[in-house]
Image (cartoon, rainbow, N blue to C red):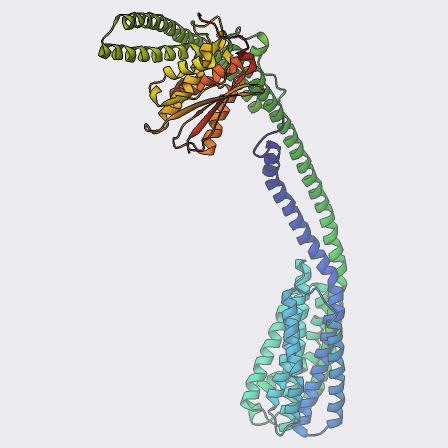
Length: 633
């Protein structure tokens, strides 16, 4: 049978297994995405090179040329046409870069930040040109202005070369440092042009030049230490070439203290040395960049191949884990479902039937009811639970048999005591009747009537014990008895009978075999009405004929009951609950329900118009007699 409340064990097992499975799938997906993303980023490098790196490198080339041309113009105020032509080339290069960069959509946050920074520096280019065209600008400030734009491009290159493959990253980072060294070489050429035009160098220019020389040589040293043999070879040849050695001498001369007072005779060859080194450096830088780009695609293919193999194996492991987990969940759920069904059949069928039969006085348990549970299970814990259930079954059967034996013993004790009390009370009533007939004193007669009334009530209580033990009281009538006499007899068994008023009932009689039980039933309801209503109020007993028999109404004027408690009492009256020794305060209700069930009488409690309760007793026509009532028992 399906579970009636709570979540099924299959769902809980699924939730329990989902935690490690989700973690496993998440780790696999993370590793696959991380490694696969590395490969995809490598494949995207070609696009970045086309749309960002190469156009930005062209901007640097044109800015380096414009920087040198601008310095030559502001020191000599000649070459305006050449400067204008160079600015136009720079503007076209910048426009092409902006157009290509706008195509990139999925840039990393770091890359987007550096690109925005480059845009801001390029926006400062018109202001820098106006400074060049102004009156007597400082050459060093002009050089620094162009340098800031170049520095922004190199920061963008740094963000671009964060490739996942370690060796390829080192090569790309080294090539970027060589590009920075090339730009510093351009700055040195601009400073040398200023120095040659003036014939001397200022202190600020000398300090700036010293910093440029030191930075360029450091960048060369660091970059060449990271390059492999194929990319480092052309630079090693350049460092050993006469052009580089001559430029080193020029750098040392400009850095020297004597340059502040005058230039050496070899200064005339500095521009030529710079041009020669510049041409070789541009050639080597272009070859190094292309060499790194050519290595990107094979590296990306290798990473994707690894992720394909490792990811496929990981995916198979994940699928196998999921299948095994689901199979474990299904088998365990089936075992527990079988255990649940067996336990339910034991509790709701076998034990319930056994308890009902034992309560009804039937025989002891059968072999089928004592058969142990049989559940197909491979799990040790489930088998242990089955064994425990079998022990519980054995204990429950023994407890049910003992309880039935105890209840039967208690019932017999009730019956025996009640029969003895009934006999004694019957003899006491006969003695009281005799004393009443022979007594003429009013005070004595009143006391005897009180004793007679008390004895009658005691007899009713004794009969209640017999009724609760499913036995029939001994006294009865052979002939029908008028309904009015039955109701008056019932009222006479109540302590506060003076408060009860029996209205004239219809002219019908009750069959002799049901007179005692009907009177007892009405007496219990009348007594409840008197007990739960104020002592100064009265209790009305009315009766009327209905198409199906006679209805007797007992109405009090008490406080009444709330609807929930009233519904609970009506349920007890209709369902004939088993008598519970712990609920002795509801003894009257148990007696009424037993008597009503015995004769097919329907009893229901409802609210009274006076605020109390109305007990409605429907006597079926089968309990009524059409013959006139006759005297005698």
